[in-house]
Amino acid sequence: MECALYDKNEKGICTCRLCPRRCRILPSQRGWCRTRWNDHGLLKSLTYGLVTSAALDPIEKKPLAYFHRGSFILSLGSWGCNMNCSFCQNFEISQEEPESRKVTPHQVLRLARAFTAEGNIGIAWTYNEPTLSFEFIRDTAPLIKEAGLVNVMVSNGFISSEALDRLLPLIDAWNIDLKGWQPDFYRTLCGAARNPVLETIRRAAEVSHVELTNLVIPGENDDPKAFEDMVRWIASLDPAMPLHITRFFPRWRMTRLPPTPVSTLVSLGNRARKYLSRVRIGNVTDEELAEYHWKN
Image (cartoon, rainbow, N blue to C red):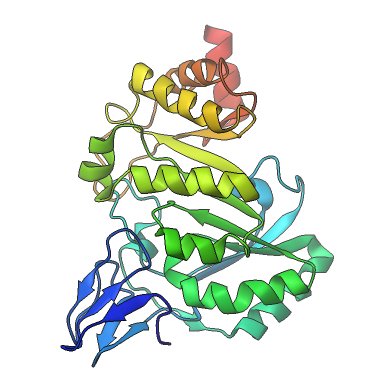
């Protein structure tokens, strides 16, 4: 499938416009995310219609705690990412190229409809970075909306303004990872930039339901002052914007760090509630929270 957002010059070099990297891709080469390939001057998506993961999930698992509570949503993921977070929880599909199954937009629609009897409300584009499935979402999401179902985007938010312009009318709800507040955190641990993510959050919140997730990593993005600065910024957009403060577990290149202490999550949650009305702690069991409160 030819990509929708790119330019090419007289030498056949393509410039991708999907994300803020604006990769300059030579013939027979791929872009940074590996999903864009220059085929003799035509930029092509290598993941169009490819699904590596599919599941009927509770909507709360996305996580979306304030959007159609108690419902289910059909989650679909492909492979690839335009970040390379050292702590990636889904690195097997975001940083590798696993086996996949090819589907069409109409097959996705039929599958979504087939699960409505079980409570399915639509499609969640998730697991890997869904922006990289831009062309497939462009072709499929309108079918989902026409059927009276919803589209949910679970994204890192590292999206070009032009791509976001085209996605916003198609997406009913977003969960966006706000991975940290310090720009250096994004540069060193995610291989990306923070400000484009902030712009995606700001623009999405103007037209859609948006919830944010912040994965708290011990010693990396758990500084209370920086966290409070981040929460103040969120509150400046909307003090009712939900924030999910989630527990880190060792993964991929960060296996030597311990899981986030429950005490850290509770403390940051208390700080967040000074500014935000809807704060939730994730990746922690009710028993662990109860034990912490009992001891303290």
